[in-house]
Each structure stands twice: as structure tokens, then as C-alpha cells.
Length: 467
Ligand code: MN
Ligand code: MN
Image 1 (tube, helix red, strand yellow):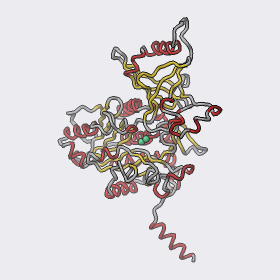
Image 2 (tube, rainbow, N blue to C red):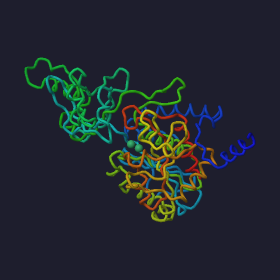
Image 3 (cartoon, helix red, strand yellow):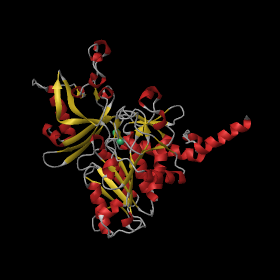
Image 4 (cartoon, rainbow, N blue to C red):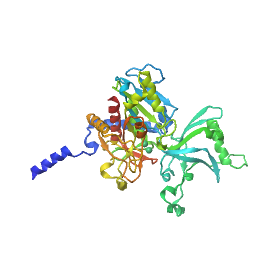
């Protein structure tokens, strides 16, 4: 009996896939690295809440790590570190490899835009002596989650004279914050009969910004006037300047540890900064890779990647073409020989909502970075579906570098679905696979990830781009 048991135990060890908690596989030295990496990441999250701020932070780090702004025609040699800033909303960085450029690049692609409330172009109004901003939500959100949380305002305003002013208000402890109000339960009898998508409607997402009327004035809209006067004094803007502004309301809270064991991080915008930051760090620390290591931090993923700062545009292709030509190659040959990790998050299994997942094929907290062969919806619609050969190569690479990884797809087959930038990069004839950190409460104002999974994403991206 005992012998039989030990044989089956041995066989299971040999034949079954291991899906154990990552903490059973890391030693104390690695555990320390996991926790210290999370400290750096939290700082990045707090200072880079929008795509523009993420680019500013990234460029700061790039320049202090020897990266220079790329100009077409530059002489490029192995070890050179370059970057291109796309309109302050996306950035591409590269460390030139020792292999000829025609052997392709190793590309990591993550996005730095996150769901939020954008101000409309004519946002300011007064109603019943309260001043409010009209918003238009950005990305896929459950609208009811965005009421009654403190929000800060970030962005840029282009004034009539062509000068611009940056806005960042609500992050410092002494700053005021803003919020979207909700109806008290006592009077919500009708509201609570609506389906969840309509409990709060798009036009209900109005940001409360003031209530004091302008003094010494009998005019109408005195509260609005008072707010406009404050804005004029602070930023030098008039109401028309909102037309040429991009102002984004995002959660005002800071990233914090979650749990008695501090194993998790709660914060706004993990999707996809929990992949963007590890990819950036891997790039900064990359020296003399074999293949040229390229990382792109892109914008507009949450609205479908359209627009000139999103990956459906040609800006990535142009960059690859430019550096290829500078090194005596052609863009199409380089792209065709390239490999890409589409570094984006996946859904983490949540026991409270277990029914949307198929337990054998979903990602779990603390089981490592998640490799996703295909995304999409229904019958694999909208996915690039990595080849078995490429999945096999990535799997071998991860194992050889002791990266703790798992595999999972986004929910049950017909539960819904979603996509990433993978398909757009694969469409450039690049071998592409999704890899990223599992997230709880994805797209909520406060998302949750595991420190171990975050660190494994960093290890994975570093292993890939150095290869
Ligand atoms: Mn994402
Ligand atoms: Mn997303």
C-alpha cells in the first residue's frame, strides 16, 4: 500500500502540472526582493496616475540611466540607449543589442492609460448654487463605483495665447479633492430598481467642485463665476480654454499595502502600470542585450488603441523602421524577425465571484506572472492567438530563469472577454504573446495585485529582453 502510494506520488510529480503558491517556491532572499520592488512600484503609481505623468516619470528615469532622445540618422551601436517620446503620452525605449538588427528585436509593450473620468470640453456649470464639471468616462468602468470616492484632477490646458498650464490638484495632503455624489438610500427606491449599468448613468458622473457665490454681485451663476475666478487666478484660464484641455479625474488615494501580511497592493491604475513599471525597470537595467531590447509604454489601450498615441497607429512601426534603417536593415525584416510580450494584466480568480471563472484556466493571486496564449471574446474573436512554438519558447525561457508563472484566460468562454495590444503588434508580423499580472477588482477605482506576481512580471520581462 505504502509502496503504491509513493509510486503514484512520484508519477504525479513527474506528470502533473504544478500550480502551487509562489511563496512555497521563493527563499527569504527573493522574498525580500519581492517586497522591496513593491516599495519602488508604489512610488511610481503615486507619481504617475495618468499617461502624461507616466511619460514624465519614465523619461526622468531613462535620462538618469543614460538613455538619450533618439533622432533619426543617429549612429547606433551595441549598448546604446535611446528613447522616443510620442506627444508626451507614450514612450518607446531601446537598448541596442549585439546581434545584427535584422535578427529582430525583443519587444515589451505595456499601456499607461487607465480608466478614469475625463472632463467634457465645456465642463463647467452651476445648478442650484453648486458648481460642477461634466465628465465623459474613459475606458470600461462600472459607473456606480466612481461615486463617493475622492478624486484628483490631472492634465493640461492649452490657453488661447498658445501657452500651456499643467494641472495636478488633489494629490497633496493640503489640496482639496473632488467627488461624484450619489443618492442617499432613503430616497433610492426607484434608483435601486434599475439594472447596475444604469444605477449611475454617464450623465450622472458630475464632479462637485464648489458652492460659494462670487461676492458683491447680484448676477446669476455667481458660484460658477467664483470658481472661474479662482481658476483664472490660479491658472490664468478662461472658460473657453477648457476646449483645448485634457483634464482627467482619477482616484486621489495613494497606493498602500493590503492585508496583515502586507502581501498585496491596493491602488489606482494597476492596469497596466503593474506591467509598465516592471517593463520600464527591466529596460533601465538592461545592458548589452543580444537582440535589441525595445519597450513601448503606450496610450489609448483602454479605448481600443486608436489614435496617434495608441498602438493601432504606426508610431511603433515607424520607430522600428527608423532604427532598422540607421543600422542598415529594413523595418519589415526587423519586425518579421521580432518577438513581443504584450505586457498587460489578466483577471485574478476571486472566490467571491468564482462563477465567472473556469478554475483550471484562470489566473490566481501569488501564482506568478500569467501567460495568456489568446485573449478575445466568444470564439476567440479579436485575438492574435500565439503559436504553440512561440508559447513553447517563452515557457522554456521562463523556466530557465526561475520565473514563477502560470497560465490563464480571461474568464469562462462565454462570460465576456477582452483584448490587449497583442493583436495589433502580431498584425505587424511579430510573434506575440500576452503576459502580465493578475488583478482583483480590475478597472475599479481601487484595484488589487500581489507583490509576488508583480516581481515575477519584472523578472519575466528582464529575462525576455536580455535574451
Ligand atoms: Mn490593460
Ligand atoms: Mn484595462
